Amino acid sequence: MQIFLSKEFELGDVIDIISEKLESGGTVTFTPNGTSMLPMLRDGEDVVVLKKPSGRLHLFDIPLYKRPSDGHFVLHRVLDFQSDGGYVLCGDNQFIKEHGIYDKDIIGVMTSFTRKGKSYTPESVRYRMYINIWYYTRPFRRAYRFGSTKTKRLLGISDKKKEKTTKKNTEE
Image (tube, rainbow, N blue to C red; front, side, top):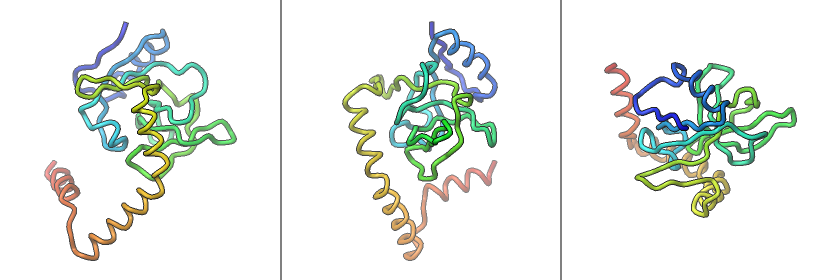
């Protein structure tokens, strides 16, 4: 049996239900919000399926975890492992790696996601190609973003998305 969350909830409000469902061997389906996993997961559009991990996470798994430092619930990719058993995680659209996430912080792991009615699993060829391209071009993407930002500042070109977000946040 699956739990489908079709209304907007804060994860903190339903995390006990999600954890209980995953602990009993079920799956949970929800639509994540945020841009940290772009371009793979689109804000408010894609649907993610989680299950309880069976043992340790693997390289490139995407767990839902509760960040110990601030209590936020985050869905990021495993990029490395620490010698003390922790994980190093980072969003696909981010460059700052997060250290110090342990098995006790992990709530579930993504088993698939759906976009426009088409489902993708970590075992699919397209997904594996995406991971390899995205991961191994990471240093180049970071240099490009840095250079692009500096060039825009030098030329006085504004970031329309950033201005829109800032304007929206100040109006609230």
